[in-house]
Image (cartoon, rainbow, N blue to C red; front, side, top):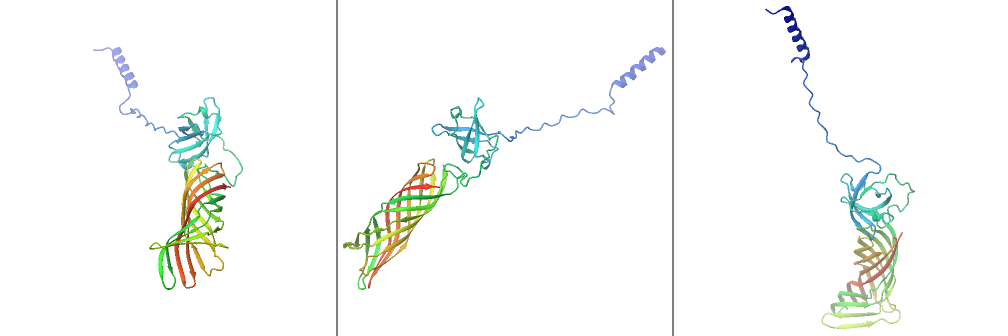
Length: 338
């Protein structure tokens, strides 16, 4: 038989063990680890990165910036900042932004040689405060250019009006053939509006006022081979054209290509003492050529232009329907954009 001391020691051991060991009924399970949320970098305001340099045009001090994915084309600021390793920074002007790319002009940057492919570009830390201008964002080369008023002077070399389908009737006989009028070139005055941002499509619409052209000779070729040439003497008849021109434009940097249509309003002054009555009406012509921006405001153009007109003539019982005639020629023109 165990002694009372042994029983007491045994009970004490059991009691201590019961206090140290957690009860199954009251045990609290260890909490499961909380899920860790994915970390997403959200750009901050201020001098945040907006993209990096993709291509460099050293000769023009321009770069193509690859815009970061979180920045929409419409959110690209008008200027971006390049910061050199030394901490010196310079500003570039955004010329155009589309499809995740932006063309940036660093012509005013003294640290342009430090710009490398992959160099980060950022938003300006401080917004520039300046007085609003009526021509803000309207200079050629700005991707957000606005239409600009334009005037110009030119010369159209066209000197022969050709009619390919003439029908005549003198009351007894009738016939068909062709005819041409020899004339001379004429100066032009142009007034219009132009929209021509760099590296994009644009448009030009304007009016052209040409000087009077004297008609010197007329040549008629009747079907069957009969030809007749007449020379105007004394006070010669004249024809003058007012034109409305509409051209689409695609512009690179300084070079652009205009092409489009024109509509003529002819004014004919007939020769006195002939008894002849001549009626003219407008018709559709066309032009295509090449242009060059010599400066931000001065542009030069060389165009191939065709002016068209319709002519009918009567003299007593005789009538002649000349139909549509064309006056092709080259146009040399200088324009000034306000």
